[in-house]
Image (cartoon, rainbow, N blue to C red; front, side):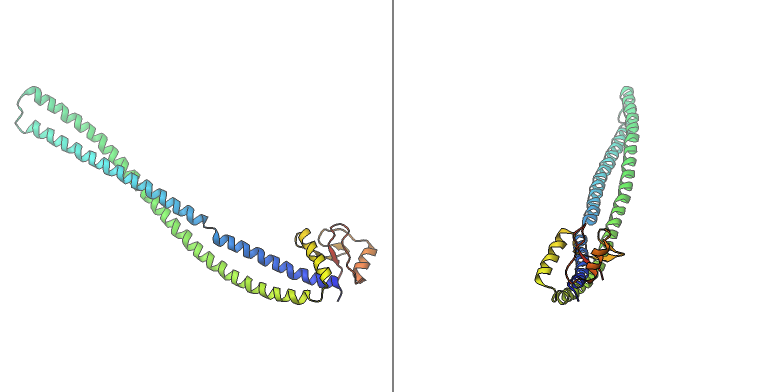
Length: 233
């Protein structure tokens, strides 16, 4: 077997390892990414604060309404209790009672509006809580699948590493160093197979003489365009 073929086999194994390591990095990134959880938790926190504030406003509105009704009762007790007989005082009490009654209507409207706000925010809070639970459940399911995939890839990578050692052992140290140098310069692809007399990596067509040399020579031949090692097969 010539060195070009052996390097091509090594390239195939390394490409598999590159894909495995890239996927493992991607999986680790996904596992560490808790943005969706944090966003859902922040939404629950915000709606909780909004709901607590709305409930506080409702309690305040209810207290104001209660106090206003008590004021009306006190005024009406004086108006109809028989203790006040002065017509002018009775007239003033009547006007005060009417004014208090009108303002009670305003306070009751405010209370109703506060109740509606609480109802709306309660629904918003429940929706946020539901979404948080759904996001957590999805994350648990997703992470379980990803952890299983990571175990499989890690095991497969170990097999590829063992295969890499076996494939690389017949290759000279000089060619290994040259191969590693090209992989760094050429996005991980140091060896390109010749397909239809063209470099499969960059698409450059080889001359007939160049193709024949790559096909039969035991020496390494390189693409004149991209510089990769050619394997003519």
